[in-house]
Length: 375
Image 1 (cartoon, rainbow, N blue to C red):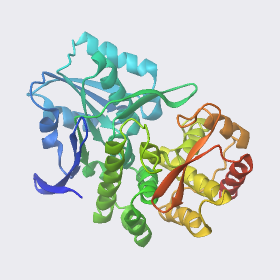
Image 2: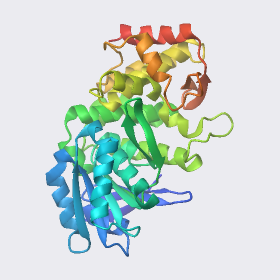
Image 3: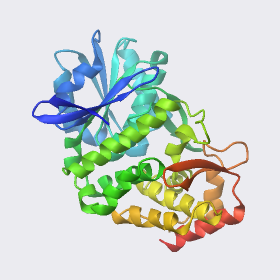
Image 4: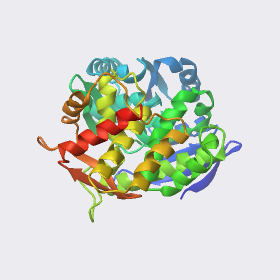
């Protein structure tokens, strides 16, 4: 699955992302010394875009770079507040003032919102400059940092403006997880468990057999979960980078959006107060119930969704103010929709995803009722 390497005193792994713009994802501990190698040669300036609450960590990264590069450090608003056109414009103006050229590099440090915003800034500046991601949350490591999706939010919904822009490298230093709040790490497991259902059942076996180890940032179990989840994403995006579709009925990159149509609707309904991984957990329960109602999967697989996500402390029900009609209207502007037709990623069987287009309204209501009963 991966190539072992040595970084400092810690063993690390390198997962290679092939395709038209190949790059490496390095996973391990004490890895900051590897950052210059990912940035590459011939670079004069590095713009370090970091989450505003990570100033101390940003200083450590900057110290790794100063002396080799001119470093422009730009603190961003926390969380989804970073993903706006106004913040992107502030970054563009800062790059312009520094005469940031095509041979220079953006480095992001933070969670998924930082990665999305920083990747979009890199994709749009001079029509594309290199970017290296240093994800600091479990969610960002297994999801946002790999695959080249970038984006910002608008009033109409999440990630509706963006670009595909693959990074030049990703540095997953697991030491950042040591100080990650427990609730943030648990939220990140939402994307991990999702990967188990859509592609790698061994992920589910690891989580179900030892949920405590799955929540322990220093455990070998969590490290294996990180590597396996990243490998799932690599396999999918290499085969279908721009979400044009898979082969033999596989939905391609859209499979990674399992549970996300409802998840994004819930996020918007809460003003992004709910964590993304928590919303994904609820969204996965919703599509499992939708598939059950439509006769696509049986009770055992549908029920396993509830037990797997709940085992690590993730929510499996929705009790927010937004009702069925509200969430349905938001889902109608989801990126997977085609015209007025809703489309959901569902499972035919474990690790066998497909698209369910235009589901019956009664089945949607049944699935919604199932998640509200679980709240």
